[in-house]
Length: 104
Image (cartoon, rainbow, N blue to C red; front, top):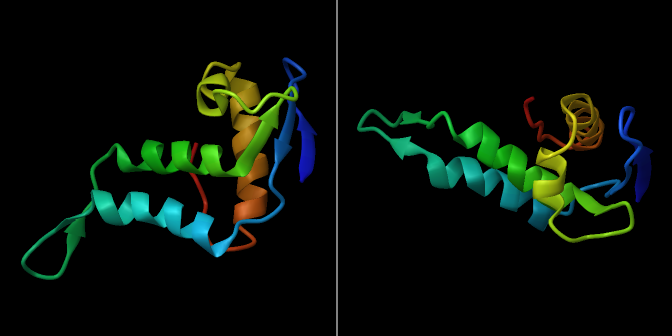
């Protein structure tokens, strides 16, 4: 695990240092399950897919916040925006080593 401390509130966050294939599939499935396929073999993604993928990635990548693994997603979403962005940036550093990136 990789330990980080958020810059504003000082939360100690434990991130996974890599994704398993299963976890990567969970994140990708958010996109696939949201896609609306058209007749010409193209697809459209709803605007909510990015936040849904981001939520799934937060759930998958964060092990603990301040030594607690309860309500991870809600606790991250309730953080100061600068802390939230810091966590997303740190997750992206890890997931970009594979192929997934979540957007701010």
